[in-house]
View 1: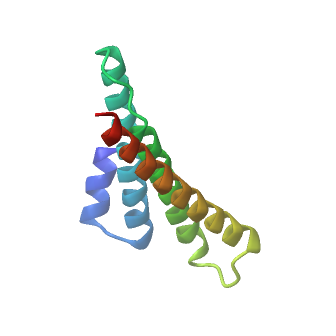
View 2: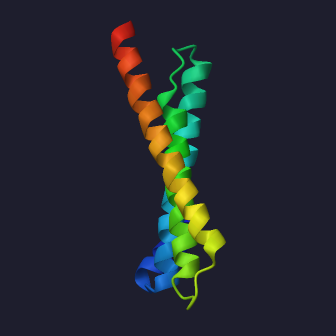
Length: 109
């Protein structure tokens, strides 16, 4: 993955930049999951925030992927627009949940 990322930077194109952003967001998701597992194995306090962040990153990644797929189309299917709208709603809901989780954690401390 790293080799292709470097190769895409050397010879940039529209598709290579989309792949690079997609790979970076996937790496962020994997790092968040690993960090959460490490915290769990160390018997530290469970935090909801990382899971909400993973959900937000995944939804943003999906929106960017749909946008990249439909950017070359002359006519965008309505289903793709609905999917992007639903992903945006999911992001907003996860943001509210993250805010409430952080607020509850501050009250708890």
